[in-house]
Image (cartoon, rainbow, N blue to C red; front, side, top):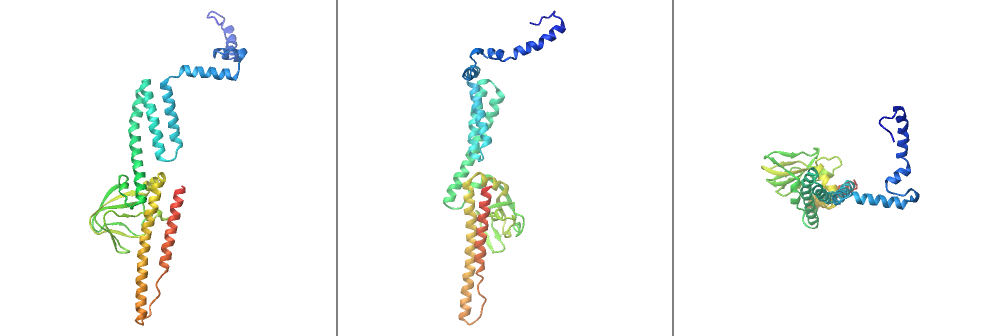
Length: 301
């Protein structure tokens, strides 16, 4: 023992001895409630388990479960499982805050819970509608919540051929004209999606407003997020672009057939004519192959 009236030099000399005694293995084992003469691994494990069970309560168990689910959210890569595990984590932390009397924890996770539920429901609706769309028509109405509105006046140009492509469009009202091929686009049409797959992200055609038009736009950055988060959306987008390319091929085949019919009529009349440019069809199929490879490359990311 170190007394108050003890000589300071003597007291300082006894401090290391007292520290060494308190830090000795036998002392620590005794403080843990173990017998130094019967010190075994099982005895230590059982004693530690008893201490944990004696000190932990139901609120601590809820906090532990919430922490485990939170760590899982840091591991998963896709958005839907992340939201599901976040909801479980929020529920356990809300219960912990209520039982432990921690108002900050309770209100923080109580506010986070409806946000995660809303985002999960929104993403599930997106996936379900994308799956249905992939099996049926190519409507993109389910994409509207992720798009922002824009207005254009008659004569305005949405983009020129060769411009840098940064967003995709959905027509709502009005009419748009694809100038290179002279095709009018009514409401409900998607345009600008091929620029997303173009390696140089360049516009392939010029689109002009024939009349005042309302359109919805979504950036390629947001489109890429949806693409990586939802394989169903990636499949839908593949079908959308393939459908557009097949329409272009059908137009080219119509031109080829018209040229062939004109050539046969000219031959019948005895007028020489140039052979049809069958390489158009080849170039169109090459374009489809390139874009499909581009989609496959993006999906590996």
